[in-house]
Structures are given as structure tokens and as C-alpha cells.
Image (cartoon, rainbow, N blue to C red; front, side, top):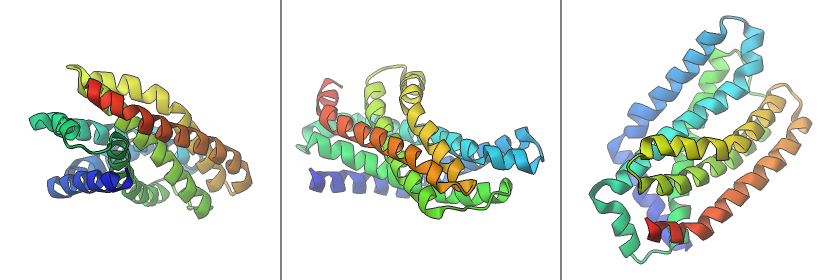
Length: 222
């Protein structure tokens, strides 16, 4: 499974690197959203700092949805899903590989957004360890859910509208826990964020495990 996961992840990352969709579309979109959030809240520095964690993770959530829709479009073009089914690759490996490729792209985006958010919202990035751990766990959960429901929506004619309806409710606990953990870290209350980090780990591990087990049947049904 792990060998197949590396192959699939490498394939997805090569597609994104050659197309430059993430660099030319997803990153500018996320930066514009982050800027608009700041403009909507106004110049009050205290309000911006208080909302920084939530605005950051909502921006990541929207960027993740955009990336998942891009991944679905690639797989549905030229019978790409049929190719995966006929490739003989392990279904769990396909899921892990696609999730890992998406997670890696999101992590790079999060680094850029964190720096920009710190500058825009005048928020020093304190508690780097907690911030990094939260990013890794939350990104794993978002990528797993996005990959799973992207495959669900890919077989329908209304995937552009169905995917957000499936995706947002399921990842709500991940976004909530990540926001709370980041808020604790940014307010120099790292100990208060550990409980949220543990909850985040539970959800993320559960989503990855469920997706790995169930993706095979989902791929065949699609």
C-alpha cells in the first residue's frame, strides 16, 4: 500500500507542478480572501488579533475546497478514474497517496498564509510548536475528508455544488479544534490548546482510517 501511495502522490504532485494551478490560482485566491477578511473587520488591531486564528482556518478551508475540486476535475477528465480502477494499485494506497499530495500542497499554502496573516493582522506567531502540530493534524483531516468526498461527488453531475455540502459539515470539528488550538498558541496559552490538539488528532486519525478502509468500495462504485 505504501509503495502505491508514493506513486499516486508523486503523480498528483507532478500534475500540479506542471499545471501551476496551485501557484497561479489557489494561492492568490487564499491571499485575497485573507485580505478581504481583514478589510471587513476594519483597522482595529485588537479585533484582528482576536479573529486571526479563525480567519486563517476559514481561508485554509476554502482553499482546500478549491484544491479538491481541481483534483476531482483532473480525475474525471479523460477517464482518469477508470485508469485508477484498472491500474491494479491498492485502493488504500490510492487514497493515502492522493490525501498526502493534497496535504503537502495545503501545508505549503499554510506557511505562506501564516506569514501574511501575521503581517496583516499584526499577530506575532507565538507557540510555534503548537501551531505546527495543529497544522499537520488539521491538514491531514482536511485532506482525508476532501479526497473521500471528492471521490463521492466525482460520479455525479452536480459535483461542484454537492462537494461543499458534503465537505463542510464533516470538517467543521477539525476547523473548530484547529482554530481553538491556534487561538491558545497566539494568546500565549499553549497549555489550553493541548486539549483541542488531542481532539483534533482523534478526528484526523479517524478520518484517515475510515477513508483508507472505505475508498476501495467507493472507487469501484464510481
